[in-house]
Amino acid sequence: MSIESQIKELHNELPPTVKLVAVSKFMPVEDILSAYNAGQRFFGENRPQELAAKATELPSDIEWHFIGHLQSNKLKMVVPYASMIESVDSAKLLGEINAFAGKLGKKVDCLIEIHIASEDTKQGFSPEEALSLKVGDYPNIRFRGVMGMATFTDDSQRVRDEFNSLHKVFEQMKERVAEGLSEFDQISMGMSHDYKLAVEEGATIVRIGSSIFGERKRG
Image (tube, rainbow, N blue to C red; front, top):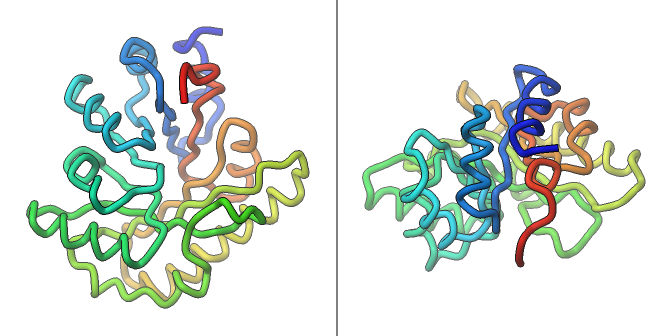
C-alpha cells in the first residue's frame, strides 16, 4: 500500500480525538511530501540535525514533534523548529529547555516522558519524579501532558497495563502538578505495533512510522 493510502486509512481509522504523528526519521523528503500531500501535517523526528534540516526544507505548515533523546548541546537544532518536544526525560533537560527557550523569547510545548516499560533501556521520569515537578519553575515551558513507550513484547496485556499506568500518571499530574492548566491534555503513547491498544487506553497522540513508510532506509 502506498504512503498516501496508509495516511488516508489511518486518518479514517483513528478517532477525531487522536492526533497522528507520522514518524519520519531516516525517511527522505520525497516520502514525507507524499504523506504531506495526503493531508498529514504532524511529523516526528528523533535526531536533532535531521529535524533542523527537514524543517528548513519542507513546507512551513508542518508541525514537527521531537521524539528522541535530547542532549543540551543539540537544543539549538530542536527548540527553534519543534512545535512540541515529546521526550523530556529529566528535570535537568526540562531546565535546559526552559533556559534556552527564554533566550529565544518563546514558550515550548513539552510532554513529560514517563518510564512505564519493564525495559531498562527506556528513559524517562519515574511517576514519583513527575509528580514532584513544579510548573512555576519553568516559565518558558508549556506543559502539555505525558509521553511513554510500552515494553516491546507480544504480551498485549502487559502493554495494555503499561498504557493504563501512563494514563493514571497523567490524571495524577493533571490534579497535582498541572492544576488549572487547561492545555495539559495530551497523552502520547502507541506506535505501529501497539497503537490500537494505546487508543483504547486513552491516547490522544499516536506515533506511527513503519506502518506508513515501511522499513527504515538506514539507521
